[in-house]
Length: 303
Image 1: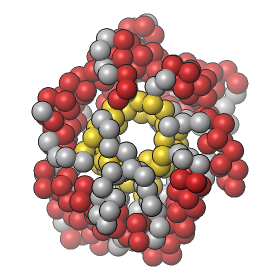
Image 2: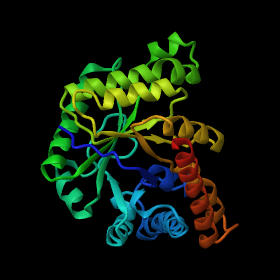
Image 3: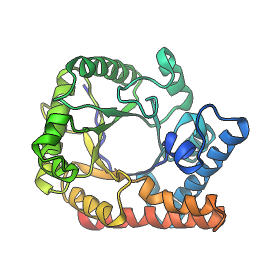
Image 4: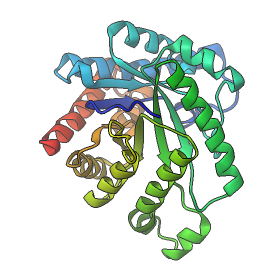
């Protein structure tokens, strides 16, 4: 059974790999040492912004980062040393089926990075391919058992992409799917995974428009004695207006303890830094301001 995590948690996630390597810097395939270092530089700008926000008043005991080992091992080491909440991903980037970044060796990598949370990003639709879902659930249970045997926390980022028949039910309208079908599918997924022995301490949830849907997700995450399990809302790379709406809605629901908003926080400042319109320090300052803004919005809506 999961231990759960229900303290406030404000995460700046920048564990994106393809988004940095290809989306931001335009590189595909195996990177050179110089290219790898450049991706690391971009991630350092985000981390500098995070640290600046904490210095400027974001409560350190609730502030966390999510960054990958490939480009952010030095950042994880520094954040652990500084006493920040840390998270690192276990999944291979960009796959439709969850698999381990480091294969059967996943455990030694988690132990070496020593994050507060081990995070998985999983695409799972209960109306999708049953064999695929079963394979994923088996791996995800294995990971949870490994983590809990070692007193580590399990962060589960759940994406529920529509299958064709579901999209057809809403006339091919993605927004209608997100509003009318996805909330129930998320609840069903959480329950299905729990029944398969997957016990997350924290569910990282795509934005929900309605308060009652947030309440239903919390009820599923906390059912049958899982009363300490928390939920956080993610930004999904949406525009600022939508992120503010999602944060405000989730914050008003007990059980939603915080957020993880990445690209909306860092993307524009990093593009300007990449194109040499602003310095690394200016980009970090902009990122700090956005992250601080999300914290302020969440805390205000919560109270």
